[in-house]
Image (cartoon, rainbow, N blue to C red; front, side, top):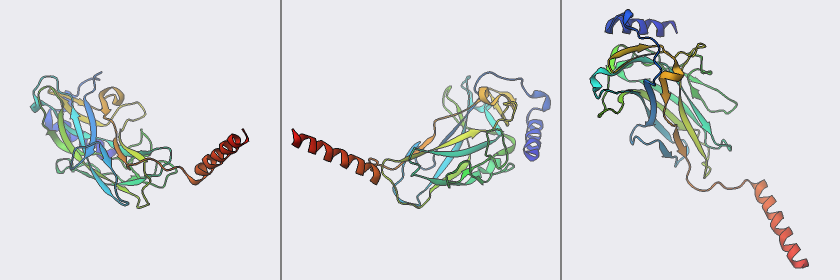
Length: 246
């Protein structure tokens, strides 16, 4: 965390000076979006055990003036988790988070376990913990691209989800989410420029957001467990016997 703070300070000084830090802004300034690297999809079918999916991680900076040249980002702190359906049958490990080359001053983070499931997540085990987080950081602001008054998009890096190798169960799914770091005071660890205004370490809930998760699924209809099939069979036999008595 000391390294992250140092990089943020260096970045601010090199761009506009420490005195340029703005006060808290009530608007969402950056949205984190995660989607498949090859197709940009947020809904991906898993077709084979052990299948690996590479996901791109983007910062989408709010742009209100139509000028994407004055929107940029220098640092942010994130973690990633996967949330399975009630069966928890489709599990996989998050791994190999790698910052884009322009953001090589931060940390790629590390695998962690959030819950009782054997799969691995990535980053801190609590929202307000930055330990093991993915912290892409640059000494200078990194620009992106966009159209009109839509957001300015900057590629922060990639992360991989790999199915655990067990047989696939039809009708099951898991969602991969990005989670924004916030300290105990509720402030995020980020530095960016939106419409030319430098903003740093403001309220994570008010100034940062994430898009919907990446939805990983196995096609088909879930097959009832043997115990459920037995219960259904007993019910059918009872119904047949009742009709015969009539």
